Image 1 (cartoon, one colour):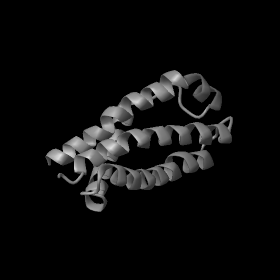
Image 2 (tube, one colour):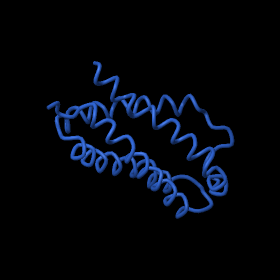
Image 3 (cartoon, rainbow, N blue to C red):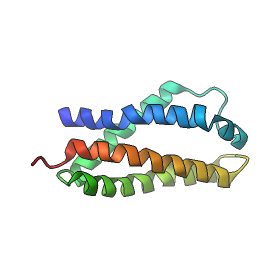
Length: 132
């Protein structure tokens, strides 16, 4: 249970500030030009989403990659998590939602996911790494 909570925190604690600053501060003007997000975002939904993702990713990591060295486990996990997240957070959204620039959306959100999983993957891997 302790590892599960640590893994969820390893996901949520960096994800919230990264997502907030990326989407609402650093690239806020770019996202406004894309016309893809609502004017008033619902932050509690975002937090709930991150908690659900953190729980699911922690279960998957524990069952599939637990005991791997940090770099190896983080790399394998990042490839899996990025690919899945990219398919439903970037490609599916671009396919379904109106936006000013599909290419611009795909580019900025792909960059976000690369940064995101580069940060959270080693943190989750550290929780479940083999102890020497």
